[in-house]
Length: 161
Image (cartoon, rainbow, N blue to C red; front, side):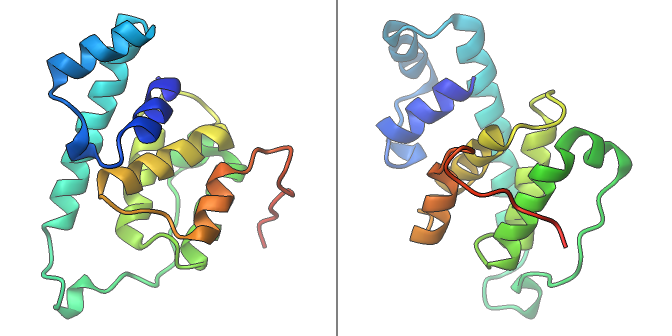
C-alpha cells in the first residue's frame, strides 16, 4: 500500500490531479501494483480525504476557535502500543516545530492507527504525514520535507524529553 501512496505523491502534484477511481485503478494495475494493494490504498485515501474534509470544515478560518490548540496531547493506551515511542516522538517533534497543527496531528494519528501495524515504522509514518499534507493540497516546507525524506540511517535518533 505504501508503495502506491508514494507513487501517487510522486506522480500527481495534487489529489485533484488524479484521474477518477476507475482510471486510476487501471493505471496503477498497468504500472504493476496488485489489485488488493490498490483497493487498500484507495480505501485508505478515501478515509483520509473524508477525515480531512470533516475537520477542515469545522471552524471559520478567521474565528478564535480556528487557532491550533497548544495543549499537550495525551495518548490512549491503545495509541501508545500501536504508534510506539519513535512515531509519537516524531509527531511531537513536527508539532513543536509548528510543522503540524493539532488537527493535522489528529489526522496523522488516526490514519497511522488504520494501517494495522504495531508499532508503526517511522518510514511509514513519514509517508502518512506526506499524504495528509498532499490530501490538503499543501506542500511541506523545506524543514519538514527534509525530515520526511531522510531515511532512518541518514537521520539521527530523536529522544523524547
